[in-house]
Structures are given as structure tokens and as C-alpha cells.
Amino acid sequence: MSFIKLTDLDLAGKRVLIRSDLNVPVKNGKVTSDARIAASMATFEHCIKAGAKVMVMSHLGRPEEGVFSEADSLKPVADDLAVKLGRPVRLIRDYLGQTLDIADGELVLLDNVRFNKGEGKDNEALAKQYAALCDVFVMDAFGTAHRAQASTHGVGKFAPTACAGLLLADELDALKKALANPARPMVAIVGGSKVSTKLTVLEALSEKVDQLVVGGGIANTFLAASGHAIGKSLCEHDLIPTAQALMAKMTARGATIPIAVDVVTGKNFSETEPAVAKDADSVADDDMIFDIGPKSAQQLADIIGKAGTIVWNGPVGVFEFDQFGEGTKTVAMAIANAAGFSLAGGGDTIAAIQKYDIYDKISYISTAGGAFLEYLEGKTLPAVAMLESRAKN
Image (tube, rainbow, N blue to C red):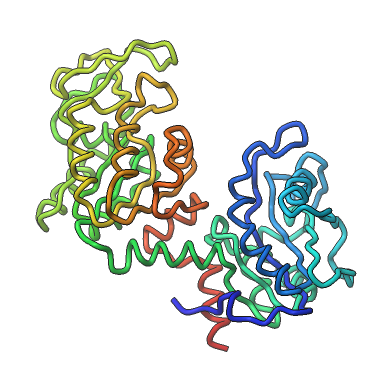
């Protein structure tokens, strides 16, 4: 990958338009989790310090495109940013086709890009209106890099200069380090409820990793594929042959998909359901598997401890309920304590990282969900392709 980085450019007096991912949870007009805002601050501060006229844009929520709604306005984000920067942050609602009066070293926030008709379809006329606002376009929203939209892709084609922000560049460097030439052994942990939603990721990783750990409902399908009874557990029975083929493919090249030797079960999906640990071949017809057992968790911890590279996407059990969270906690602590390079991404994964308080013990935490998965699959991300194209001309 080669693209222009923000740090390569002289920004003094330039109009700089930054596409960030500030799609944060808001309740009663207040930001309730500022992780994405905090992750974007280095790019903002770099541009402010360089004396640029800084405009930041983002989406928030899912408003009807082209229609303003107070509930999806970025006003709470502007308030949060003002506190972080220690100065007022103007929120500008009508900015298309305007000449904005911004001082050198000032940052303003442009309201929700999804209020603009044509945003989602990468409308060329809208992209040109965005591009007309700036001298430099900075793509810094890795979380939306997999979507070809006017504010993430089209604008970069028409802006005088297009570059990668600090966050996006860091994300891509971390992914490249983990996937392009990984330290071995390489271990991937992929959790989730369904094989079908992660199938392309599993297939891509099965060709790269030394151990592919499957968790959650996905693991039940692999347990069934290994000949174990799984009772009433969540399982995609039609994908059992696919699971068997993946296991055979990995075995043929000397790699493995570890299968649980013990599990933690319950009769009902409930916060108050008692947890019962049992061997993997002792699951009753009315049991539901909600976690891996202690022996399996320790086996995974041992694998992770020897890994040179660890990619983590998804919990291995229903960790929201503490009695079914020990497997995920053991895996999380093993990753935190591992000497290898660890890369984690996805909403549930970040929730687990926060729950077990290991934020500062993961080598790199991706802010993205969908883009992270698509990169793992080996797909080309439209925004990244645009930056590479602009670097050539």
C-alpha cells in the first residue's frame, strides 16, 4: 500500500476537510462512549497545530438521507470535542456550496453527512461539493473505508490533494503488520453467532493462520461437524459440511481448528440461568452451549501464549452473562499477557476488552467492525483504493 500521509503535507493556512468516524452512542443529548472521538483527536490536533483551517465531517446514526433530524445531529459530538480541545467548536449545518469563514488553527464540525442527498450512493455532484470546500481532503474514518460513499470515496477523487489521516494510517500499518508478513505462529480467534456471517473471513484466515480458534455459535457448528451432540445449541446445520471442509483443509497443511473438549451449558438463555460445566461429549438433548469449559479455555490460553501474531474478532461465549463469560475472560487475559503482536477489532471484541480492562495490553485495537472484517477477508476497501490511486497522480 502506498498513499500520501497527512504528516507528509504542509498544512499552514490550508483548508483541510477531515472525514472521521464520530458515529458514537448518544443518550439524552450526551455522548455516552467517546472512544471513536478520542481515537480521532491526534489527527485533529496535528492539523490545528499546523495552522490549518480544519473542517471535520462524519455520519451519525441512520437518519433518512437528505432529511435533517435533531436526534441525529452532531451537536453532542461538537460539545464533547469542545471539552477535549478546551475551546468552542462551531457546528455548521449548511455548508454545501458555501465559502466557510474559518480561522487558521480553528476546528469546526460539519453536521451529519447523511443529511445530504446522494451521500450513500457516492453521488458525484455531492462529492464535488465536498471537494470544493477544501485544499486537502483527509480520509481518517477506517470504520467506513469499506463503503464507497460521497464523503469517504467520491470527495477524495476530486479534492486537490487526498491523504490518509493518522488514525487510518495507523490502522492500515497494524493490519499490514498482522497479515502481510506475520510473526509465527499466527493465531486467529473468530467468534460470533453464525458461521454464515463470518464464512468469508474464516475461509480467508484458514489459508493464513496456524491455528483458527472459533467461538460462540460458530463453535457449535464446528462441534457438531466433529461428531459431538450439541443439544438445542445455536447451530447452522446446513453449514456442517463447510465446517468439515475447513477443518480438513487446515489439517492438510499442518494447521488446526481447536475443538472444545469441555463446554458450559444452560437450559435457557437468561442472565439468571445456572451454568453447568461438562465434557463436550456429555451434552444433553435439552442443553444449550453458552461457553467453552475451563480445560478448553486453558488449551486456548496455551496456544495464544506461544503465538507470534494474534488476530481477535469476537468472544468465545455469551460473555455478557458473567456465568458464561469465563472462557472469553481467559482468552482475553491470555491475549493481554501474550508477548506476540495482538490486533483486535469489532464491537463485541471491544466490549470484552473494556469489560476485562485490558485496553492498554492489546498491541492495536481497530475502531472498525465491517472494514476490519473485509480487510481480513482480503477485500479491497474503496476508500483505501482511492487514496492509492490519488498517490499515483
